[in-house]
Image 1 (cartoon, rainbow, N blue to C red):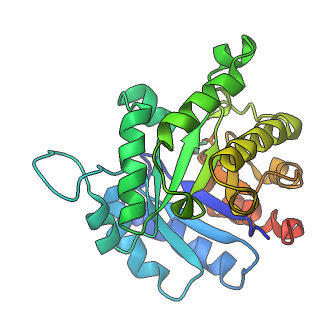
Image 2 (image 1 turned 90 degrees about the vertical axis):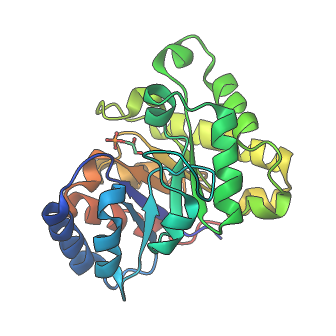
Length: 257
Ligand code: 13P
């Protein structure tokens, strides 16, 4: 049984006051929701104030990135211990924007995944192909390569703690969502990779989120697909009403086996 998850990736948006307003409105809208795991991932600068607002709510807190070392001379970086210290339970790793703009490779992301697991943070690990890779028929090869590099050496027992997010780069911030069929096909493929690496039981438990122009209008169709277990939401999580509606849109999907 896989409980749906909706995670909001705020990216580099929201000042303190804006963050407080957004969280307070989300809180009011989701206080009685237990059919979906809800996660918000504000910028580092807002984690401390946001966690103080989340007490007593079903909303979990996540970072958008981290360094793999516990501490050290890494100017500008934030460690897993620091995220834990602020109350984070999750961390997004390997987002395509980190890969593209900050040159993160699969092997760096792999170190981060290992580190997050060792500090009991749930990594939300992103994979996904570019438009060019899809159009040239290499979407699955790309995702397989990212999967193998990113999850190299991860202990089978640790694997079920991981959340995977399939985010086709061409669908991020473009308004072009993958069709539910395209999402299902890739999610099924990713689940088969998990099964090859671990076993059937873990593959059936692990959650695979879809990300890329998720909106209130398309979450229902996406999540009705067998292997789509929720969403990693960018633009639409910056407004409380659309984020709440996306969470509510998972309700039909509450008993996926
Ligand atoms: P959008 O929902 O804005 O397309 O962003 C998706 C994303 O990158 C979430 O991590």
